[in-house]
Image (cartoon, rainbow, N blue to C red; front, side):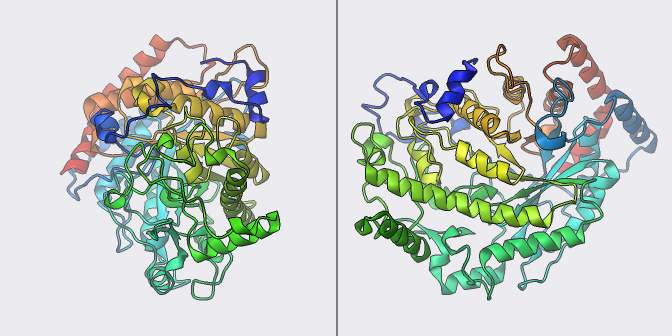
Length: 570
């Protein structure tokens, strides 16, 4: 959708964001609270943020490779891809109209075992070769804090990651390494459980307030509460010091691969690796889509900060607790006094005070960790990125309740993504955003979902802050319809008559490598998608020519893909 760019940048500066005003029959005035599963297709009844889900079973069984075919596939890949796409300098997209968008593929969650070895080694090797044959730029790997530093503080075991990264290097794939300081398990599709390091868990057991806490006292153990960021609560170190020491150890261990094989460090900053509060936890059915979630600031460390902020503001009576009228996880905005459109608490002086404090705590958390990451990886040739959640449900309401509880102070009258983009820009970091594959009409409209409008707003925020934007799909999709939406979104096309917006996403990461991807029909579509992404939006080659080339590519590489598929499914 093309909007006037001047108008949209005006919205970013603080004027009402008209494009976010959505309507649905009696949507805001008479929202029903029927179970979400009744309002949406079963395939969509999921957490609509990228939680690195779907870790497929693989088998160690792998047939022997036909060397001549493998060589032929490699040679064909070299000839067909014309020239290696560079991971765009500066993240903005290099020269105007050049390069296209490089595609990375997320690896399974359990690519490295609890024993610190590569999981299903032979299958992994065949799969990486298949991805390379498709023209994929590289892979994304979760480097789990709970695996590497599991046994004792400062004792790092990089075993499985050493081998996996060498595999990627040998095949010729680039790597986005995610510093995963959260636990795996509890989000949609988390098919394996990787807790925080044992010694961290022990400290949280001793002091439960190290966990995020809601107003009912429910603790969330996915990630250490940001309220404790600067306190020496983890065996004499602060959480931020622990994250910094981990990143420094990673740098020192993999310095020979940084800038060449490892091209990006994505710094985990919260649950699912995202810069947010754990406001919509799916574990034990606490939250269900499209509930508004709940504020997560009731641990003693966060409340202490709130108390100090209220006193500094001159309203000490506001410092005792967060909002008490913000409903429950599965309420809708109009069910609550705080989030309702007319005279809601969010739009009062108290609401502005609380939401400013709550969102600023998240920004400060990001600032602290990014400052450290920037210093650690300076002059190594890698880019730094941060992932932000695509919370698109109830986006068409005035309060944007689910975004507020997650820590994004975004309402119909206030842009919450520009401050995040500006914070990332100060550290030359990439803004990584999800739900790129979604279309508004695919989502339940009674919940006023608007992923396309949300992506548009975020893209404009990154444009205004001059920060590079990268994307991910939130859910596994193998159909051309989703691929076309990704192509459209990654082109960052706004008003074609406006100047200054001629850029593309700096990269796209596809969720995820699994047996479904290697099925013949899905693989054919995927190869075509990768080829089109690589062409770039300003390519003068016709669509039919690109598709014919992709079909030939699929045909020639099919035996290698079949080998990978067999390895993954047996």
